[in-house]
Image (cartoon, protein in one colour):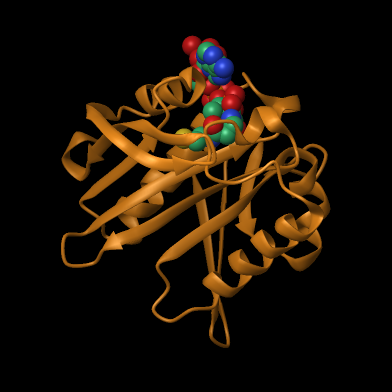
Length: 189
Ligand SMILES: CC(C)(COP(=O)(O)OP(=O)(O)OC[C@H]1O[C@@H](n2cnc3c(N)ncnc32)[C@H](O)[C@@H]1OP(=O)(O)O)[C@@H](O)C(=O)NCCC(=O)NCCS
């Protein structure tokens, strides 16, 4: 992974890349590419949001921009861009959950046109490296719906360990659902 940091006035611009992907800060006009997947039921299944209206997707992008400008910054959310077509195909993020305990949480989402190609694993792997090496975290965790086989596989491929099942962790429109909890420690790398 290559990392580029740029301090433009107050905003810290961070970019990361692999051979086929790069991660960059969100821009206001990204909402159209985000809406292509955030408006789909299969993408927001088991999630407390979506399928998004246009207004909800625009609000998501605005919140990502606002969070990237906060000081201290605790949310690092990036657009996943396919280098070949310069196309935004998803989002990945790491949130600092406790500065005192040096812990953070990752999350990711990929446009279904690109599922099963290793994109989520590759992007989330950059987030884990960023969390340990740049943010100085000690523990990084993630949760997913027990039914979300794809997400669970991504977490296992990242070398994260299953820690247990959290009961009624997330409140959805249909009622509460459980979550599986996974983590990786700096020393596991
Ligand atoms: C979960 C998600 C991010 C996976 O993205 P992806 O780019 O397809 O994941 P990867 O290609 O890196 O997959 C990693 C592994 O999981 C497997 N996998 C992916 N989706 C799968 C599915 N639905 N069922 C079973 N296995 C799946 C892949 O085949 C791959 O395994 P392999 O290397 O042995 O072939 C994507 O399906 C998605 O965006 N879902 C909706 C949002 C979501 O659930 N986000 C996570 C919230 S916790």
